Structures are given as C-alpha cells and as structure tokens.
Image (tube, rainbow, N blue to C red; front, side, top):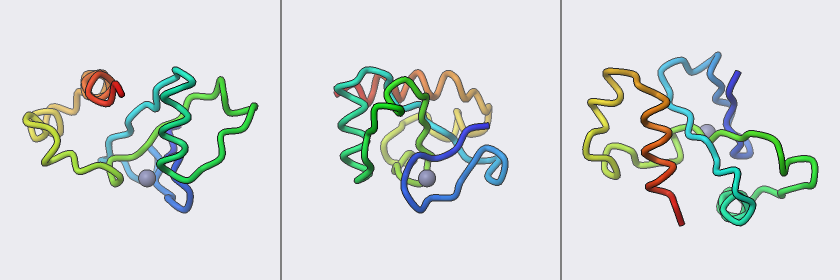
Length: 89
Ligand SMILES: [Zn+2]
C-alpha cells in the first residue's frame, strides 16, 4: 500500500484509488528537500524507506501537458518516472 508522506494528509492507495502517488526520490539530497518542503523531519530510520506524495500537493493539470492522457490511461509507473525527471532538482 502507498501512503502520502505529507503530515496530516490521510490519502493512501487504499482510500484514494483514483489518486496518483509520486515516488519521493531516494537520493538523500533530494529526499531532504522534499521533507523540508513538507515540513517533515527526515529521521535515520526514514533514509531507506520508500515514501510517496499524493497528487493533492501538486498542480498536475498545469504542470503536465499530458496529464489527462496519463490520468485516463492510468499508466502510473510512467507518470512517476516522468515526474521523477521533472522534479530532478
Ligand atoms: Zn497527500
């Protein structure tokens, strides 16, 4: 099951089937940025854990040209990959 890493966000892949969950980069430097952005503490135990962020915290419709295409085809892994490169900062 995927769950959103943003504090107070209760979206999971179980209760929000239509939502897209973006994989947080495993690269430590990027991961720190994501956690800082979400005002969440990155603990030692979290370093190797896989985290996800739900689409609620993105403006996907404006940030992605082919958002609807992805949404309709539900090609989640391609979307994640796309965002992964897009968020490559
Ligand atoms: Zn969320």
